[in-house]
Amino acid sequence: MLIYPAIDLKDGVCVRLMHGKFDQVTQYDEQPAARLTAFATEGAQWIHIVDLDGAEAGEARQHGLIGELTQAIDVKIQ
Image 1 (cartoon, rainbow, N blue to C red):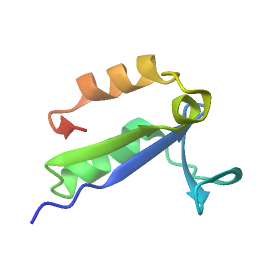
Image 2: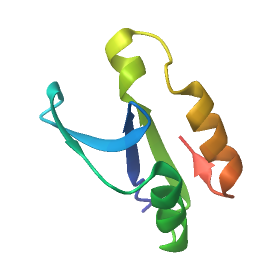
Image 3: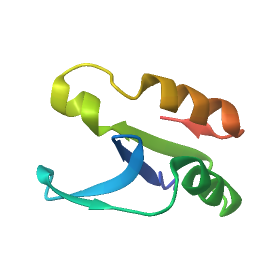
Protein backbone atom coordinates (compact mmCIF):
# COMPACT_ATOMS: atom_id res chain seq x y z
CA MET A 1 0.00 0.00 0.00
CA LEU A 2 1.20 3.51 -0.81
CA ILE A 3 0.46 6.39 1.53
CA TYR A 4 0.44 9.86 -0.02
CA PRO A 5 1.43 12.55 2.49
CA ALA A 6 -0.04 15.93 1.61
CA ILE A 7 1.16 19.50 1.61
CA ASP A 8 -1.70 22.00 1.56
CA LEU A 9 -0.63 25.46 0.36
CA LYS A 10 -2.39 28.75 1.08
CA ASP A 11 -0.64 32.06 0.50
CA GLY A 12 2.62 30.16 -0.07
CA VAL A 13 2.72 28.44 3.32
CA CYS A 14 1.79 25.02 4.71
CA VAL A 15 -1.68 24.94 6.24
CA ARG A 16 -4.55 22.66 7.17
CA LEU A 17 -8.21 23.55 6.93
CA MET A 18 -10.63 22.57 9.67
CA HIS A 19 -13.32 20.43 8.02
CA GLY A 20 -12.48 21.98 4.63
CA LYS A 21 -13.49 25.49 5.72
CA PHE A 22 -11.33 28.25 4.27
CA ASP A 23 -12.03 30.53 7.22
CA GLN A 24 -10.70 27.96 9.70
CA VAL A 25 -7.00 27.66 8.82
CA THR A 26 -4.11 26.34 10.89
CA GLN A 27 -0.80 27.69 9.58
CA TYR A 28 2.42 25.76 10.18
CA ASP A 29 5.86 27.30 10.67
CA GLU A 30 7.60 24.82 8.40
CA GLN A 31 8.27 26.06 4.87
CA PRO A 32 6.83 23.97 2.00
CA ALA A 33 10.28 22.98 0.67
CA ALA A 34 11.35 21.80 4.13
CA ARG A 35 8.15 19.75 4.54
CA LEU A 36 8.64 18.23 1.08
CA THR A 37 12.22 17.27 1.92
CA ALA A 38 11.12 15.78 5.25
CA PHE A 39 8.45 13.63 3.60
CA ALA A 40 10.98 12.40 1.01
CA THR A 41 13.58 11.67 3.69
CA GLU A 42 10.96 9.71 5.63
CA GLY A 43 10.47 7.48 2.57
CA ALA A 44 7.51 8.99 0.74
CA GLN A 45 7.43 7.88 -2.90
CA TRP A 46 4.61 10.27 -3.82
CA ILE A 47 3.57 13.60 -2.29
CA HIS A 48 0.16 15.18 -2.82
CA ILE A 49 0.33 18.98 -3.12
CA VAL A 50 -2.87 21.00 -2.84
CA ASP A 51 -3.25 24.59 -4.08
CA LEU A 52 -5.93 25.77 -1.68
CA ASP A 53 -5.88 29.30 -3.11
CA GLY A 54 -6.59 27.79 -6.51
CA ALA A 55 -9.28 25.49 -5.15
CA GLU A 56 -11.04 28.46 -3.60
CA ALA A 57 -10.62 30.71 -6.67
CA GLY A 58 -11.39 28.06 -9.27
CA GLU A 59 -8.03 28.51 -11.04
CA ALA A 60 -4.38 27.73 -10.26
CA ARG A 61 -2.75 30.25 -7.93
CA GLN A 62 0.32 28.43 -6.55
CA HIS A 63 1.64 27.26 -9.93
CA GLY A 64 5.05 28.92 -9.53
CA LEU A 65 5.67 27.57 -6.04
CA ILE A 66 4.49 24.08 -6.96
CA GLY A 67 6.82 24.15 -9.98
CA GLU A 68 9.74 25.09 -7.72
CA LEU A 69 8.86 22.30 -5.29
CA THR A 70 8.66 19.67 -8.03
CA GLN A 71 12.13 20.65 -9.22
CA ALA A 72 13.61 20.66 -5.71
CA ILE A 73 13.47 16.94 -5.00
CA ASP A 74 13.25 13.60 -6.77
CA VAL A 75 9.85 12.30 -5.69
CA LYS A 76 6.63 11.95 -7.64
CA ILE A 77 4.11 14.73 -7.14
CA GLN A 78 0.38 14.31 -7.42
